[in-house]
Length: 415
Image (cartoon, rainbow, N blue to C red; front, side, top):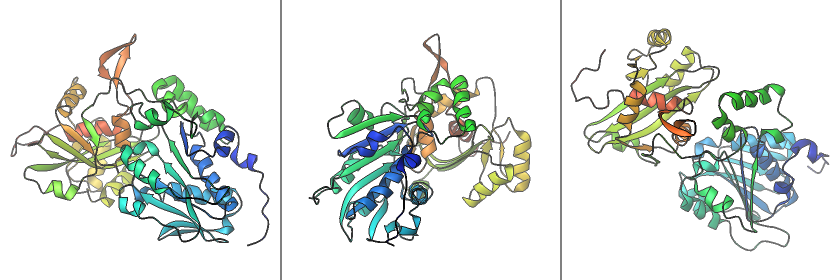
């Protein structure tokens, strides 16, 4: 335990984060594009500084608890290996936490979907000093953030400090984080923007992805490449909101029906599957599940849908791929069929969905991203009556699922 480990930090961290690393104010907020090192740097900072401050403990927060395992928990475990100190840390899956073995300091993981687990948090040794909100854009409720903020309190020993770190992709300029931290920064706030160009650990193939994006999808490049705020002006759907709800309770309501849609992808675009409940009486749609993955074969798609229990459901899929639909049918999705397509099907589908109030469960993270970035296209600087062909994979699946949304009970929906 007492053996010395020599690590040259600049080689591990790289450039672009010196101010972030040294800042000791209350709030550090980093928005950035993909591949900008924001999460890997935050994870390494936590591992390093907990070893430097033997009385410090850390709370790591995400909107939904069960997303930690494949993100922050894994990221911090990687950081311990990258800093050559993994032998000094123990990462437990049950409970989900990390322990610095020489002192017993803890990294605790919590989700805003279980408020009691945060408000009642205590540490066995030392003090709760730091908190990391990863994917902070998903925290749509500022009050939920404030409750966690207030839980990081109390006097600390000399030399210690309390700090909350937020890392996020800046999907929409309408988010409360922009107004609170970027528009009105104070002396206790570090608000910074990073992008892939400061990440010297990317390969040439990684950088080429961004260069291609710059040419083909400049709007996406500004957000995912340069870390600029997504411009919410001209949103196609302004009738949606994030809301946690009980899917089982809603499904028991009279007249509520379940619908399912599938949009195919592979190399450049993800395969997108969406599950929703429709309450025609209240003109409400409740989106409760999604699949959003690249490089899925048809067998993979079948396995993903079957694993979630939807293999026997009626699924409306992109009619442009009849071969894939037929293969999925033979694999076991007996009720899958092609969506009806026509010259005005996109606009017609959008107009129908605009008549409903749409509620998106917080677990459907990619659906929320698309709703916040699906805007009307422009020509010569003017908005035209046509949406952009981007941020629309799950929303296309939503259109397919809802193509018969206004049909009366008992009417045939077979082609």
